[in-house]
Image (cartoon, rainbow, N blue to C red):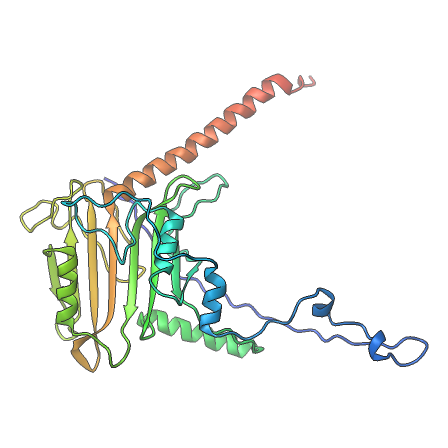
Length: 334
């Protein structure tokens, strides 16, 4: 069976800004007076020059009139169903509801454009929202940068991406959605948190909290030397926990690394994976926690239906064009 994959990637783009100088010229009658001087371009447009802002101010501007907590339209999870949320974000949520729920998890989070999880779907020119990212807002400081500054920034970002680090005391999200335009719903979600220095929980307490929420583990693996812990909770499409004796034991899994590729299978249900990265100086303390939840069967079905919908829409469009041509087109000149 061919299994669709999400391929992730990061792209960086440097934009060089050049500033021009405005020269004020006097009239033929003599030097220009203050009342007769030409206003600057920003004054002409009635716009004030951009001002610096704190991270809190940037977040408030981006978040708009957000009301928390979000009242979910998704039906409550059945009592015997596997736990499938990350801080309230669940597969099946609508795109906008999920975005609002993510923002409500922290006052500094802002939704960002993020193309890390894109399917190669022919949308025939229509817009399809396949997901969104969220990160902590950063202060806005207007300082003119040189080409050397931009090159240094790109090098720094590449280094950070390779190291897969997140600033302590912050969190980031990626939520993948699928469905016909305007009705996209969550099929997977990932969250990464960097613990603030001096407030790091023990790895044992993080594992205990995770098991307390998601239930008995399907699999736990630790890396010798680094102390990293990888935990998995896997279920079949009927919500039954997969154990070592199940033929699906090695088939239904997910990688908790933030932004890693995910596989979808109709034979698997809700899969939750967590990765705990210890503090380098003390492997008993947690430095980073990454959690991902995937509705594999739901994502597989949503992907298939969405592709079919786009193909049917395009076929209907072509059929209408042929019908219109039969009524309105002129005869060929022979």
